Image (cartoon, rainbow, N blue to C red; front, side, top):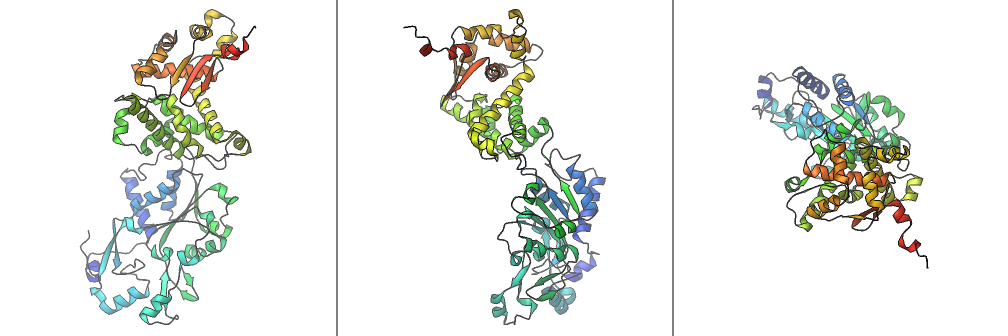
Length: 494
């Protein structure tokens, strides 16, 4: 904590005033020279968004982050605080964080005029210099800028002509700090107009008071591009005054997406100790999100938040944890069957178009899951459709597995099956283990990874129409397609 407690002591230290934008610029330059991480925890933006933000800070610009939901816009805004000085001196008791060397409020000016170098000062931590407001249609000019406070006028026995009766809003109180407005288009047009002078000239007007307040604020706004046409719009004169508009985006690769999900998932230590999740399942989770962003059933303009993958992983692990608790297993590995517990994390995070509404949120979620299973299956194993098209029985790597099911065998995987029952069900499929270990002979497969891949083969054969998969309330059953087609009820010869 700095030692200076009065204006005189502060002057003696050689302290000089800087604008908040210059402060951010100076501290960014120090971090860049020292090769320090400027935005810790932000993954996937190293070559796109973050350099743009750094350029905007160096240019001392106000910033608009434009992107779909779940693209870390607010997280980036909050990390800008790290570029502020750790502590900042203010006139003690000031509402507006008055600079002791350059006060702007009537209160601070009067106090300094009365006490001179003995004026008490306080030190404000950088975390207290960040103000964030979610734009909603009910936000008023009084909320942001301020209004006359009749109670203050009565208490101080002042007339409404005295500027000391003003109650300042959020923007003036963010003086010498960072002010963030999230979802800017949701702000009514007349409220957006009130920001014009603050952004350009730095003065404000409250109920006829002509105040020249040279506010020193780093503005940062966030918006969803779809909001320009849906809920509202950013009026052109305001956009013109925001100097840097920066586009955010979703993770460009599965690996980046997995890193984000692993970092953000909120897991209890006991869950991590009880449940192991193979990297294959992490990949499948991210493929769900990537498939959702390209799905014809989901509104691409609305976007699919990164929170889908994060909550899906949390649900996956909780599903496996619950299963292990019910079965009495001390430890377990997540399975593909556990993905049915992930569905609630999907249905609430996608905005469906008309075709999607016809399918229903649950149906769309199941289609996305099917697509993810099929993608992972075909990346690791041969396409059974191509093997069948060759017409040679000896060239079909799935021949023994097909024959097993053609014989009328049915495999049932219970959602809450114990580890032993799960292993027993998969080991009962003739040729399944040999196929997996033989096809992936170049990989050193562990026990649980082998069983997971065995399940993936069954799931993948169902998604490629080699097997029929029936989803019941608490289990999955796999059987031959033809045997299912010509069930016993159809084979009644009288």
